[in-house]
Image 1 (tube, rainbow, N blue to C red):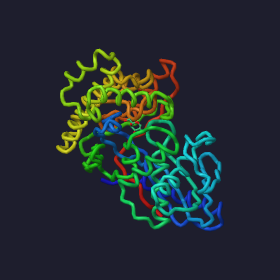
Image 2: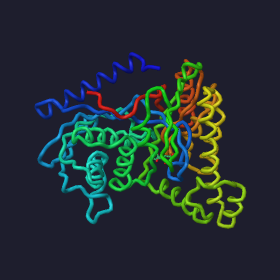
Image 3: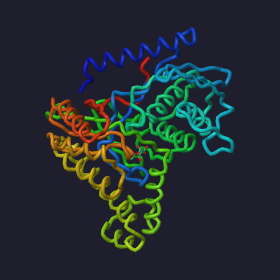
Image 4: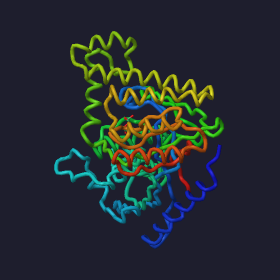
Length: 399
Ligand code: GLA
């Protein structure tokens, strides 16, 4: 499966624009351009930090960085989207929780990668980075991981480091967790780094084993609608970390290392019941979601993509009723997609807004998007945005 000619042309135009902007800014061309995608998670939500299973694929929307080394230890990051430049030096990088650390800003997702690599003992110094990002921010499509993974890819090549793809993802996550201060799992960075064109990635978040499973919606007469409800979310907020803490508490009460280890769900829920409904519901979501991912990956391996629909629906219901991370815009989008022919639909990403995905018959994504826009207008919500997604390539050097 290939990208459409239009997608290839658009990607090339973005690469040329970021290269030209670098050259204009610095008076000489960059040493290279690196690209890392956003992702949608097909299924497996809030399972990653419970040592469970996930199944994302990469988008064509990506972060691109044109970059070159500098030998004075300075780090100069320019965002073309924001028309802003942030300048610091390798000696001034401090994690979010260091005494006197400044409030985090967009550039920390890039500078924090320099910090993470250095902290892991890699010889990395200064760098110029000119960034352009087509992944919408705060939409649950992992714009932050795209920034991180593009930066890590650039630094690895610029400094001649030998770091395998999974370790790159781990270092990018370290930037997000320890430098930026968002306590996320490995899903997003693994997706952005390891996904390959035409595949969905199956990952066991405990063993870090991965498998590329071919996924071609068009070949079975389908299309994957990604609709941004335009309800922004943020992982640095308390809800994400509170879900995570509740899961860890439940695992502790059950005497298992992580909720991934729950074999007998009914018995586990009975044990948790005296400790409150919240622990019961959160645990039920994680355990059933892991089961759904395993079912989904079997279906995908068998090429039965249309049969994923009911699993997407069940995942959404579980996020809405048990994990309680959906919001009215997201629920309305999912219901409307189903009412207009989607085989299944669910929120994707961390929750509290962001995007939904809907598996729809080929050629109908736009019609379903319009129907959701109409439903949103009727409910007094703002206009959504949407596109059709095909599994795309992970982080790589593109020039
Ligand atoms: C965010 C986090 C991921 C993962 C998802 C929920 O995207 O960054 O690590 O926990 O939420 O599945």
